[in-house]
Amino acid sequence: MATPCHAGAKLGYDEDTALNRLGLPTRDIAPVKDAEAALTNFEPAIAAHPNGKDFVDRDEDIQVKDLQNAIKEGYRELELIKRFTTVGTGPSQGRHSALATARVVAKATDRSIGQIGVTTARPPFGPETQSVLSGHHHPADRHTALHHEHIRRGADMRPVGAWRRPYFYGPKQDAKRLIEEEVHAVRDGVGVLDVSTLGGLEVRGPDAGEFLNRIYTMAYKKQPVGRCRYCLMTNEMGTVIDDGVAYRLAEDLYYVTATTGAVARVYADMLFWNAQWRLDVDVLNVTSAFSGFNITGPKAREVVEALDSDIDFTRDGFAYLDGRSGTVAGVSVRAMRIGFTGELSYELHCPTSYAQTLWDAVLAAGEPHGLHPYGLEASRILRLEKGHILIGQDSDALTSPDELGFEWAISKTKP
Image (tube, rainbow, N blue to C red; front, side, top):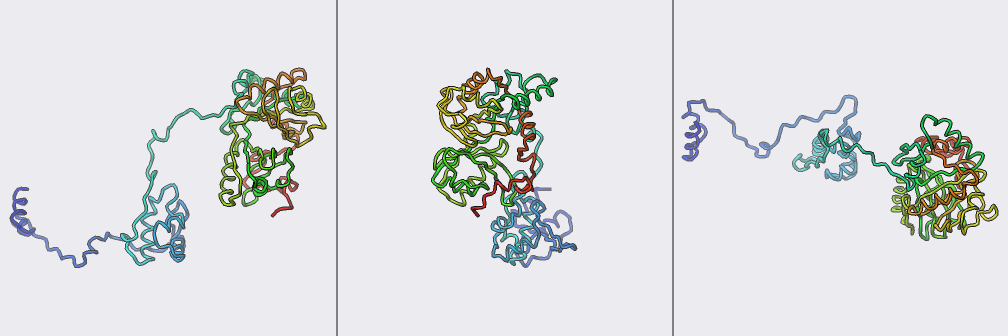
């Protein structure tokens, strides 16, 4: 059957002749007068929703009126409208909204869809296979430099954010008794806690004080060198999102701590805001570069005074909220008289590569005084007894400083 048709095509037969030779009826087709109309697909009319909610993009809650308003603002090209309204930027990446958006824009600007075009729908705009979603099954835990030391001492290691931290030391069946012993060790004697998971940020530059003034609620420009000051961070709504301590090492250098789970966000916020302010300051995340130990309890001063150090740890030489830089057991340290337990506390921060050396020195100096390593559960009990807050546990997405009783942490001498 194909041969006569091809032969007819070569001889110049038209469609009617070919159909006649095959004994088939001919078709009477009206000629198309408008060439552009022949290329136009069927397009249903755009009808308004009876309840006035004409959603185009349900990912981003974009309605027809949002697109029309964008056009009134002067945005006529689809790519500009997409960025102005965020249409098509949700999880579906415009897969279900791109054509509808093009139709609305075409109608509002008196153009065709062909002239408007559509944006590219990027993956994933369809279901993913299970093999893609499965991934690996090994959590990427972070370990402090003393992880093996805690394991050797029989610590019950549990996840805290991305880190593994000791909850208490000893067998799980004796957890209640062991935690109580750790609490009493701090209250009655002295304990040491691995706080290496705390965030560490160095803020350096001529505008470092001004930068912290804008980031945190207290005042830092006139903070004396060698002193520590509490840091309370809020977002644009005045909601508390983090806290820590700023130790001023020099006129142009602060060492700022942040909570374990929030340091990445604090660091990102600092970079974001300084991109707007353009202050002469540099921010460096040194969380992994430093390890820290908190020596706390009534006998804490006896322990630190027993260390081989060039830092004066005496009562007169090291006051509350003082910060000192020096060496302990031959290791460079940043020492701060701060704590989370309500007891006399000294926090020693050192380069992570020397963490084991400093830890061994602290344990040796503390042995005559009954120094007892304690875990996170005891730390939480100790801080609850003293009323210290834990951001994210004692606060939520709406908690303000006033609700926490932190009016004292808000400077009245700056905007």
